[in-house]
Image (tube, rainbow, N blue to C red; front, top):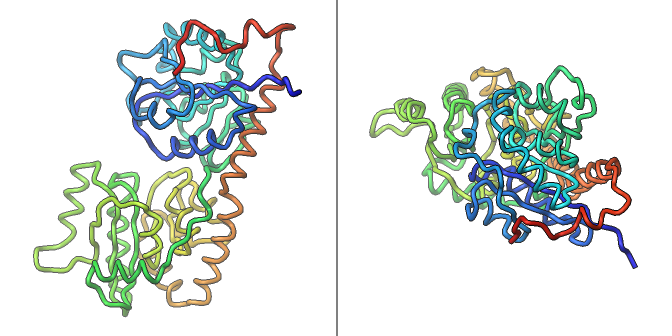
Length: 401
């Protein structure tokens, strides 16, 4: 009879907005054997979207929830961490009473809120970094308080490695590598909607309309491609406006009424990979993206990627699985796109390599195996008391659901 105690993993969340990291994390949790792991979710907002997403798992109210949570997207450092100090003791007590072995956090605000509490409780902390390399929390706090730093790409890790950063690991986000698209059928659907000729070059943009994504740079590249190509060109932008002044400038560039612009705004649509598959090329103009999901989805569905030399783009398409061009260089992006599409043999070889690489590098199985390896190593370093039956059990003063 196997009497080995389960490993208790606590996932703490700040805010209540669901993003790609939450979806990836749910895939990980769903793949963990229930016979070996007990999962506890601590949402900042009880009954909110995150709580609903992880409703299959035990949930505990955050005893140190802040009246004014950290703002989404705002940098934090020592000052932000100090804001959590009055609440760390109640959180540490909860972690101890629940017998939590590992605290796993996935975003900057959660790192800042739970790092010290995990340290006080004697739990091991997995600091999963998904942001840019200049994040102050990862460069200043994580090397001291985290037990294992994990990053979605090499690019995301700070250049100066000290403390726990020296042993940081890269574990790529998981994707459904089994996805497939009838590219010819989707392309015809898109052509019919656009009313463009069959021989048109269709370039895709997928993402929010925000400065970091560089939507204006995409429009510039499409305009340049239209100028140098003998074939009709249309750019399709799938996304939503999140920056009013930027969106106003985009609309101004689309041309006057009665003139067909080289770019069409398509709105937000799901499933996104099907519409990526309808495009002849995916143009990625974003700045400092650690690992773009649309880039990997394009690799999986056979759409060639032309991306700027910024963030983790070059890392994601290496070796020779996409085209990298200088940042904010519309002529270079346009010329690279045209040269690739005018060489079907080269294009097909590139997309085939990209598909094989994505299937190998971004599988859910690989992601789960690597994270479980981290968990096993951290649990192995815990100094357990001679009898942990009293300390580490499922009964406590904290209510789970």
